[in-house]
Each structure stands twice: as structure tokens, then as C-alpha cells.
Length: 246
Image 1 (cartoon, helix red, strand yellow):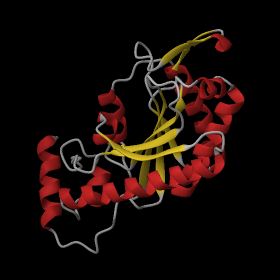
Image 2 (image 1 turned 180 degrees about the horizontal axis):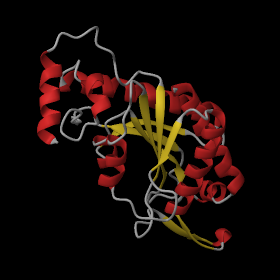
Image 3 (image 1 turned 135 degrees about the vertical axis):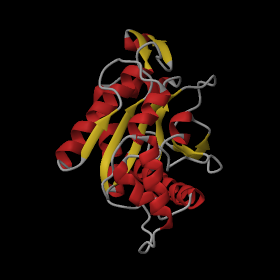
């Protein structure tokens, strides 16, 4: 199979091609919602008295992700929505990236949204932030793991060109999320867009953002995050941001 894929790739690279299409700016046909942590990887945890026990980031991430999935599916039934986990299961970072890499785009674009909750030693730290991969991290987009339907989308460009296009789209997507959350999630403030050296972002073969929706270590934000009504509001705002990216 590897030889067949590499042969197809080599042929595509030498054939005359029509005007190259930016594969990362196509209308989104696949949305991957990644609920951070899970299972024996709990993420942040705090024993807030008002919460009646230990609050685990993994649980809040999953709850927001599920709410977001429902909202997006209702608004866009034609959109393929994939969750990296739907229960309290440990999914490795490599597995999360592999789920994204294995998606056949079929002339459609894709978007990866990872949901997390922040923590810090300083209890005053607060706000949301949008993380994207570091621009100097090169993603391999054409190899033996590339789905057949994706080869024709990627083969019109060099790896360097593909990475520049991916970086550009990541910034566009992150800006949309930052603007939407700033204007609609008024109970918290923006900490901006940041490049981070994170496996799940560096290995993602599609536009990807990691959203830290607040700080579990901040009492005021933790009080909001343990409230299901607020988590529903967070999901609604994330859905509004996704709507602008489709």
C-alpha cells in the first residue's frame, strides 16, 4: 500500500495541474471537536468548596464539547461532526492527531477545535485564550498516511507552501474565535492568540485551534465553569465562532 501511495504521489507531482487551490480555505465539510484530557489524564483539578468536591478539567471539557456538538449538528446537519472522545476515556495526543489526519476531505475543508480549561499558580490569572501551532513547526501533509482523496488537494503545492497556507488559515480561524468570544462571552476577557509548541496542534493536518475557555484556578471563573448554564453559553459562543468559519 505504501508503494502504491508514493507512486500516485510522484505522478501527481509531475503532472500539469490546474490553478492550485488552497486546501485549507475550502468550505468546511468536517469538524473535529476535541475534548481535552480524559481518563487517567484529568487535566487541571481543584477542590473548590462551592463545587461540593474536586472539579476535574476533563469532565468540564467533555461537557462543553458535547453541548457544542449538539448545537453544531442542529444548525448544520450536513456537516460531518467527529468527537475525539465521547466519554471519560483516555485518548493519547498521537491518537487525537491521527483522527484528524485520517479524515478524507473529498474536496471539502476541515477544522479541528480542541477545548481546554486553563490553570495557573497565580489565582488572579483569568480569561480565555486561543492557541495555534508554532509557525516554525512543519506539518507533514503528504506521505503514506495521507488519505487518497486528499492527495489531489495537497499535491499542487510543495510542503513549504502547504505549511504557509496552513499557518495563514490558523491565524484567520484563531482571529475569528478571538473576536467572537470577545464580543459574546462578556463575563471573561481575552488573553489573545498565542503560538504554542503543543503536539496536538503541531501534528494536525488541518486548520486547528485550542481554546482555553477560562481558568479553573480562578475562583470567579471556576464558579461560572461549574454552572451548566454557563457551560451551555460557552458552547453557544464556540458554535457562533465555528459558524463564521464554515
